Length: 116
Image (cartoon, rainbow, N blue to C red; front, side, top):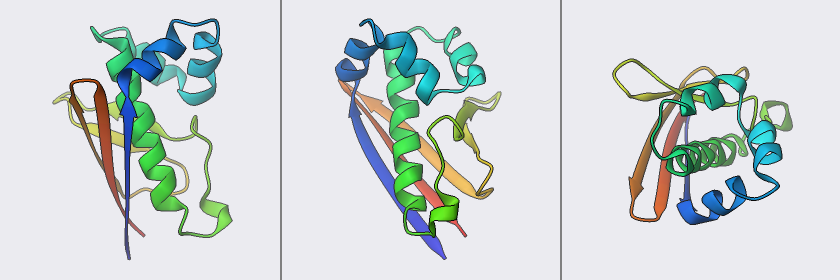
């Protein structure tokens, strides 16, 4: 069975959070150490984290149709990049997740397909 998830995030919303006193708490609650480390190589961190946040939301939406045992925290879903730049997902509860992340103007969009 295929499940789909999609989410869109305003980049300036994430930028506002990152530059506030809540920024560090937000990053540590939502993103893994590896995702945060990978962001160091990115020019626009707010764009990077917006795409990752949208991807995690899309995955959680796609997984929501399964039983509660498949629910995961944001931090337990990792969105990383292969050497070619293609994003991929590391998740404990589901191995076959395909993700696409796009940015345009002030928006980051993510779409996922889960084959379970």
